[in-house]
Image (cartoon, rainbow, N blue to C red; front, side, top):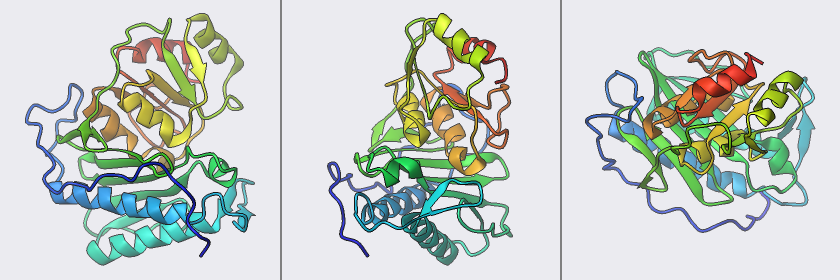
Length: 284
């Protein structure tokens, strides 16, 4: 295995006594709170996945292949997903697993883990430190746990349903920006944007940036930007986001306004901007 590359400040120890938020965040789902032990384990697994991915980051001998759709996949993607599948399978043998790099494992328990081992593989292969490790748990009530880890920056946001949203252990919440004029809106890239939608957002006065992939959603959940849009995205790119945004007080839908991670697109906002942005996008 290649030597480990440099990273940001180490992440703090992960708590097993995460606080319970009786009232829930403003838009938290009306469902039973996530099990605290499950939240803590998901956080720890994602932290360890991040440490593993850094062993390949900015190494000269990183092996990059191309999938059938032309997108890159590296030995790090495969190794990190295999690590997560092994650990989840050991602790939760009846749970299902859906991941980007391997075939789905059906659920017997009614609970499914969704894995994106390295979200932002293009950034990863070019030495850009904004790639993420994504992990989510879904149950009969929907999204239960979501984790977005940016290991090269030492930043992790996580949420459990009814348990709040946290950035490196500190409570996280969305911004209070109420209009698109002056709002910071990020995206993973402009290639998939409809020209009319892009012009509408620009004319509304939004400030556009490309802090994309999982990092963009982390920025929305922590109030550092106001909206994130992905006109094209898969379930494993998005699975952690509904519970993270809900517990941070924001909103998450696809670009047609449907509360789903399987609509092929995504947008996350602080909630105040959601309808305004949907109107601009026109469903993309």
